[in-house]
Amino acid sequence: DLAQLDLDALSRQVAVYDIKSQLRVSNASVFITGLNGLGIEIAKNICLAGVRSVTVHDVDQTKVATLEDMNSNFYIDRTGEDPGANLSAPRAKLALERLQQLNPSVPVKYAAGPLIGDGAGEAKAAEEGRSSPVDGHDVVICVDLPLSQQLALNDYCRETGIKYVAADVRGVFAWA
Image (cartoon, rainbow, N blue to C red; front, side):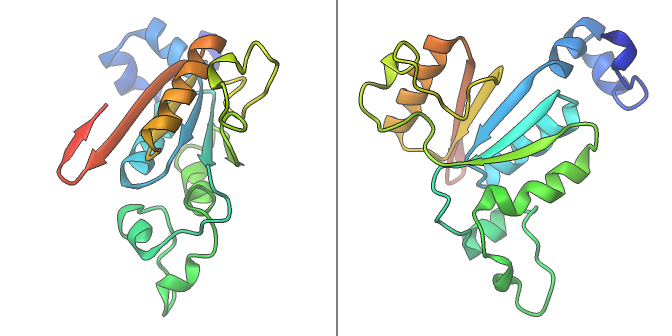
């Protein structure tokens, strides 16, 4: 709805796209898994774009962020005498509050756990009624997952009509 858009805040985007495209962006619910350096940059830009909602996800909720994560994810808190002491949770959980502060009109939620289930026959997951944290989202962005999980998630998204994007960085080279 055009009346709900903050045209002052989104004026640059409306100038680049058009109002119709911005309305489509504003109605999108985006799910992002893998908040490494590339993933956090994508999450930042998606939040600033003014989407309807963003969900950030960690596959392994028992794996806490590392110093490497802190060096590439600028939304992990670095304050205090020992910045490493802030690494007490998964990457997405640590970045959640700061992502929310970027654009208060975009709700940012946290999800954790397996993306689709037990890994067996993922392409048939939708037919069998299995649920996933990606359900209810319009777009899934996958970063920093092994290829087998990317392919399974892609199959699930195709079966359920969710748009899917995979991206990763290997040193100075990237692909999307």
